[in-house]
Image 1: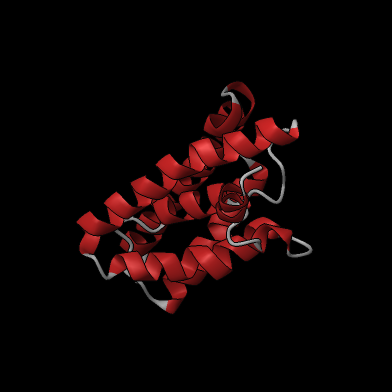
Image 2 (image 1 turned 90 degrees about the horizontal axis):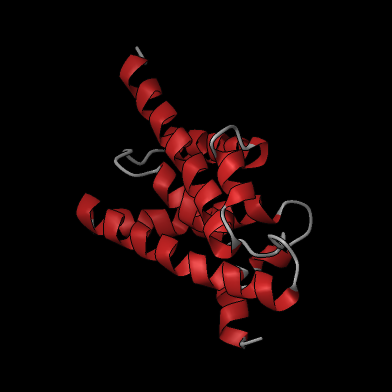
Length: 151
């Protein structure tokens, strides 16, 4: 397998950290990348997020096919892509970052429908990435509701 593909798919090898690789990737790469993209304005943020999603699909699919292992746990580029979706149009603060991290990881782990459907029915990198995009959308919607209804 290409070293560059492996490096990118595993989030700079963060996917090999013990315990919860998706959580590590969200915290160590998703948060800093989202902060950097926010500096580009919302248009730049959306383009950058879409770029990560579009790169995640072939990267994760390639690793899955090469290793003949369904959705390998150490492939975390999909978590980074999903987390970026979670923060679209969300103002950055410590509370919004913490809330988005917690909600995103919950939705990514539990996979409420249609995330579970997407994960099971879409092949290769599509399923690997798009279930995280759905988790990011759920997170984004809840974060907007929380911000709207907070006192």
